Length: 309
Figure 1 (cartoon, rainbow, N blue to C red):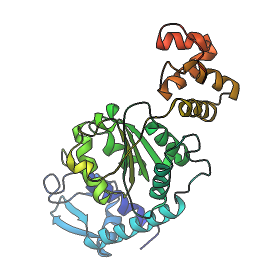
Figure 2 (figure 1 turned 60 degrees about the horizontal axis):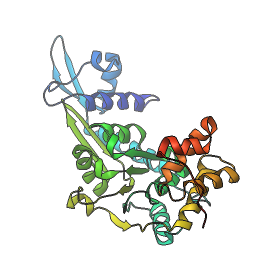
Figure 3 (figure 1 turned 180 degrees about the vertical axis):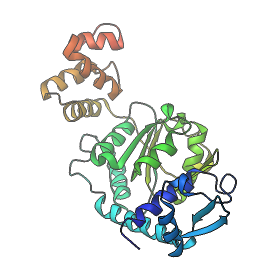
């Protein structure tokens, strides 16, 4: 094989995967479709990388041979192995340090992230617990290796397109109970064998990516029994008042870059008004413009007060 032939075969494979070879191109494609000179295609045919499925005075139709497909499959596997080595998941020393309690869940998630093969975790429980914090910490640690999805915001093609384009190692799903049925159905095969298949308008998307899924859901009854069975489900218990104050301060300092004093002020003034860490984050972001008291008043209504243990 000459230098550059692999790139040519990859382009041909990309073209064949984008069309319906059984209907539109049953007599093959020509050099015009793949934009490769006829002489080059003739050489690839002689080398056994193309099959000549049709020939006339005005048209010569080709398709990838089994030899080429085997070579491309082997090349893809080597690339995947190289990518896995280069993108080995490594845990940050401070992973989950801003989350109070839930030590067994922390241990479970760390073991899951380091496991050689996928184990999928579902965190459930009432709102305003640490479910989203766990997802945030994982995303912050792994960056581009993780994709964050909010179930209520996914589109019908969102899951397919994101996984196909970014090939993540970890899929994080918040508010999974609000995810649309199409994406939930796609998750079934993706979580079982790491395969994502879509056939639409003659185009087939077939991806093998054994990623790990960590999801959060307030309610499990909206998820199908088949989907629930693919998760190890852990229920989180509510924070105590003192634990919530520590969590708020930790999140604001670490994720919003607030000083310890300002984080303490927001936590104390929010005490008794909300048990949702998201409210603390919103207040922290508005405080530079209007002050802490006004931010709390605008977001939560009523007058602010400082509550201390």
